[in-house]
Length: 181
Image (cartoon, rainbow, N blue to C red; front, side, top):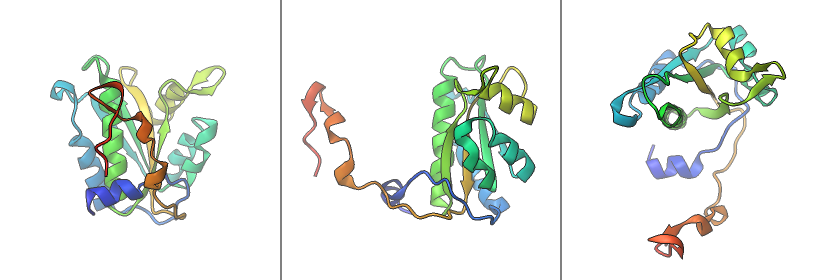
């Protein structure tokens, strides 16, 4: 798929068919994650591909807004080791973006579920909850979960007319960028 068509049509998908994601597609998505750039090439990230429905159902309870995850046949948990890199958050976010774009390029729907700095309950963070469910070691931080599956909903891409062109500046802040067609 052409890159521009991919990003022009990309949307977060929260409804999935029950069809499993083929192992070769899971492998390609994980390879894309490993190809994501990282600061100084330190690669602080690690990824957990979850296909077991019972585990996905547990992960869907990490936050109240994550309930739709239980319908996804694949969840990729993005973790990173802060001891390996001071900008692990950025590196993990870039990798999660690569995961989503790779899924879209393979005809799959995806949605980012934020875990870092979110609560599971008044007494437990979403990160602590996910760490317990998947037995993630203490030295790793959980950035996000990317839900992936064949879309059971169709959403058109955001129209170009709705883009926030007023947020583009030229040379200095406040000088509008006017070079767009």
